[in-house]
Image (cartoon, rainbow, N blue to C red; front, side):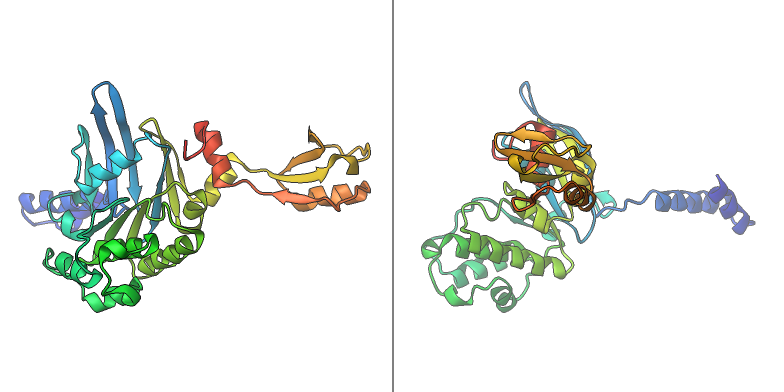
Length: 324
C-alpha cells in the first residue's frame, strides 16, 4: 500500500489508466523471483504411483544445483519434466520470471546418462551434425579445447572410452551455448581419475557463468561440486540447502574415536559409546574435548576424528543409502 500510495503521489495529474498500469508494474517487480528457474507444486503420477508429489524449489543463477535421491525417488521424472521431455499432471515452471516455453530448448543443454551416438561417425562429424541442429551454435574448435577432445577428434564414436564419451556428450550439451545445463549422473561407471577430470570440466563450465543442474549417485561428487542440494524421496522434498549447512543442521557432531583401553576408567564427564574395542565420543567442539582428554591423562595414540558426510546425512534423512 505504501508503495502504491507513493506512486500515485509521484504521478499526480496523469491519467487514471496510466496510474493503474504503473502500480501493476511495481507490484510485479516486487515479486520477481530470485531464481533463474523455479518449480511450483509439480506433480506427476503413473496410475496409483505418485512419482512427483507437489514439490517446489528454485535454482539460483550460476549455481551448481544437485538433485539427490535413491532410485524411484522422483528426481529423474522431475528433471525430465523441467527439460520438457515429460509433461506434468499439474504445477508451474518458470524461467527468468516467465513461464517456460518453447524457447527453453534453445537456452538449455542436456547430457543424458546414456546417449546413443552414431557409431560410424567420428567425433568431429558428431559435433558437426549436432551443430547443424541449432540456430546459434558455438564454434567447434572452442568446444574441442574446453572438453579436451583434440586427442581423439577423428576417432569413431564407437571406439571411445567411457571418459572420452562423457566429454563428448558434455560438448554436445554445450554446443548451443546454453544458459543452464542438465547433467544426469555424468560420471557413472567412470574410473576415479576420469571422474575427477570431469569434475574439473564442470568447474570450468561454471566459471563461464553457466548454471548446472546435477543428478548423481556419488555423495563425494555432490559435496565437491554443488552449491546447493535438494534431497528427494518418494516424490517429496526431504530437505534443501548448502551441503555444509545441511550437515550442521542435522549432524552437528563430529566423532572422536579411541581405543577403549586408552580410557583406563577415566571420569570425563561426557557420554562415551563403546563398540567392541572402540570408544566413540560425539562432540560439537573437537578442541575442547581433546583438551579434556589430555587433562584426564588419556592416551591419544589411537586418536581419530570422523566428521559427518553427506552419506551419513542422506541415511539419516531417508533411512537408506543413496544407491539403494
